[in-house]
Length: 295
Image 1 (tube, one colour):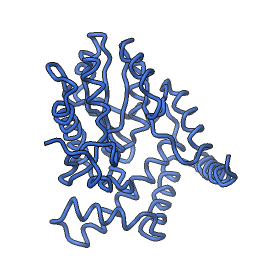
Image 2 (spheres, helix red, strand yellow):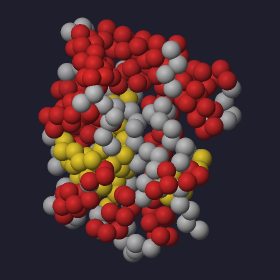
Image 3 (cartoon, rainbow, N blue to C red):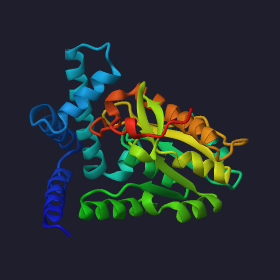
Image 4 (cartoon, one colour):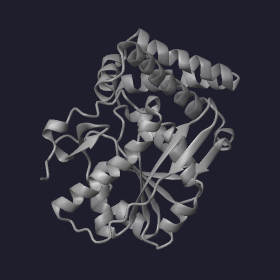
């Protein structure tokens, strides 16, 4: 363990612990101000956010991009306040499900399990908690650089009924979980570099992980796009999209590429609805040139 990991972790725990003692509106306001300080003022990945927003929204003026950039960092502050400084039960009570659980219940009913694909959008940690309160959830994660903080997040997720598995070692556990009729959650908006397939994402060429499509074809399970979006300062909506059925598809490159593109398109629809709530600090399009192209 690096001493810097421990220092970062305890600094974060100290800050969020102190904020948790304040009224919710105060902690939320302070976290928003911290987000503004980190991004627009100190410039943490500010150029990454600005350049990617400009590329995706070329019709917007420089002033509009600056305003949207500010809202991106404000959202990050809101998410920190909700996830680490707010009573979980009170937060969960303010979540509604659109259009309801019927779509996901039906997809789960055949016993093959379901792949729920989402994005770094809204308070996605809260979304996982809501799903885990209803279904057995296995979350496929990419471990964080800070090993101490990564362990802390793992313990918090387990406390909410969410089992986790690192994506590099996910194969057997994911297959077993699906075969037991469980729900596997995946993030479908991460750059995959040379290991990914070339797809469009928010209108730009990107490298996308094909793992969800391969799992769906191999097991026959449905893929359900989901996303949780903040509608006010304290209300959220968990959106359940239409299931994607891999029936009739094979492991041929063309079929996997087609299903990967369909999954990516389904997820990005939620981002278009609330672009300021997506994780723009991630360099989503950096691996496009390395991605495999399927003609």
